[in-house]
Length: 150
Length: 150
DNA sequence: ATAAATAAAGATAAAATACTCTTAAATATA
DNA sequence: TATATTTAAGAGTATTTTATCTTTATTTAT
Image 1 (tube, rainbow over the protein chains, first blue to last red):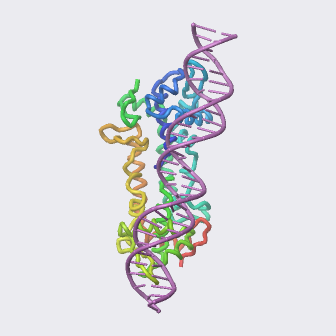
Image 2 (tube, rainbow over the protein chains, first blue to last red):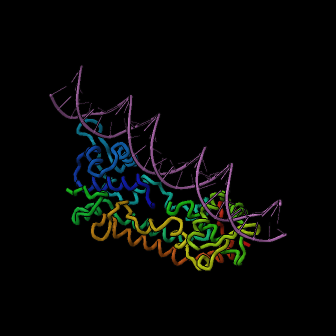
Image 3 (cartoon, helix red, strand yellow):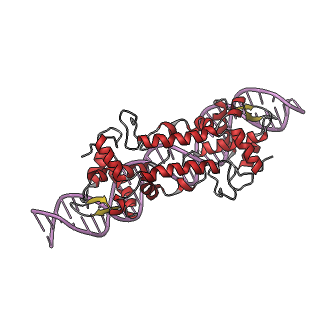
């Protein structure tokens, strides 16, 4: 797969929060149920996103998680980079460590172009707009379609 | 990563054989050494490619493996499909099983376009031309650069 | 016949990814 | 202040992918 499962869960969580369009902290437990993701696993992923300042958490009763200001403006690329790192956009298609302009593999140039188009797609799509679009058209962000945009 | 390691090894092996530009059967053992891939692992991968008629093997002394006629005309996409299957080109970016035109996820349309551009890149690049280009420019197909085009 | 080579299947191991569980820390509220 | 709730953090388990190793079978050049 292009993106790791952690990354996909992080994206879904980001869309979930963006759809709320508020300043509230939202329960991770509840979110995990709505999105059908293991609570503890989701918690770990969200910690990566708070670690990268895309989200903010609040401990205690009434606590939870929300998008930071940075997170609200974030693109899909920001989330992908926070979780999967830059690997996908830097690594050689044939997995050759030293592949680059000086000593390119046969795929180097072709792949550089395609890779860039993936990056651009992720970069031109921002979480908030995507959530709004999803909300308006009632698009899916869970496997079973259980999630309902509010 | 975009492609599995098995797939990458299959691609390297295909380039290796295409660069030979002959009808000979080439020893898998020798190829595994040149390409710095575990012999047994490579053998398994090549069996997938012979299973898909992209390669032909010959048992016994002086035996080995070569590209079939189909294999000679093959594109990178053919190799990728033979090893990794169509998953990459059919699967939803958010991993949602039922994602499609009727019930799309928020990324559906964007991803469909990007996915197609990946597919096109793999499809417009064929093994033989890539090998020739690699040969002419002495490009790398191993991590350590040990492989030399003959 | 013998040796060389792939075919095939299975056992094992190592590494990466995915997921779970437990305990600690923070905090709202009774 | 005590308690319940919630995230933080770390340890632990499971699964998948990747890789190695072994064995047996089969083919075939010599």
